[in-house]
Image (cartoon, rainbow, N blue to C red):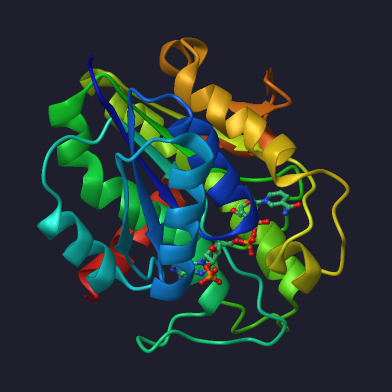
Length: 265
Ligand SMILES: NC(=O)c1ccc[n+]([C@@H]2O[C@H](COP(=O)([O-])OP(=O)(O)OC[C@H]3O[C@@H](n4cnc5c(N)ncnc54)[C@H](OP(=O)(O)O)[C@@H]3O)[C@@H](O)[C@H]2O)c1
């Protein structure tokens, strides 16, 4: 049996855990749960093994808001990676910064996706055909290339969140373009409206189950369409036109800005 290795960030959260469990139901999958909290990671691991009978599941600790932590994960990685699912996100109500001084939503929701994809790209290339699934949202917009960290604008978590989810969709196109020659598909999707820490911080409850929310990301990870299509944005298993990805100039400008954060260390 050929094994497909899938890495899911935010795998101790509502949607991430459901994605990991659904993928683990297929015993040909090796699942790596990426989480920042060891206790939650251990609990998610046990739940998934018990629910699926797949013992080929483990966790890795990583703080995606910190490049050094992502780099350390990549450096200790052994073996292939066929499916990377960027899903970890936060929406703190107050403006917070990482120890490196980067606004927390931008660092986690945007640079986290960027660094995971960029730093894992050599491993993905060596494992190709491979795919990257970016869990984004229909709730997106208001991105200001000249104020990504809310230094000029007054911070509120909804505006910072919508900006970050727009960025996820834009960077999907930027990476898709770069990784296409290596047979790596990169797509984004809206999962579903799910009750979670994140949605509660944003002030909405969410009417769908985590399993329903996981459906489109899992489909993109497993279905042939998720390999054949790239640079696309999906809702409910359907490609939907995304105006954010069509603004090539802004997409490339955002990519370059994210790249420069890496140069800072
Ligand atoms: N819920 C919805 O209705 C909805 C709608 C549209 C899109 N989405 C998207 O779905 C994804 C998952 O959200 P969710 O609703 O499942 O939220 P959630 O339950 O709050 O899960 C978020 C996960 O991200 C992890 N995380 C946060 N910051 C991190 C960091 N710096 N490093 C590593 N992990 C970190 C959290 O870890 P801890 O457990 O340690 O806090 C948690 O496991 C997000 O990308 C979100 O934008 C959700």
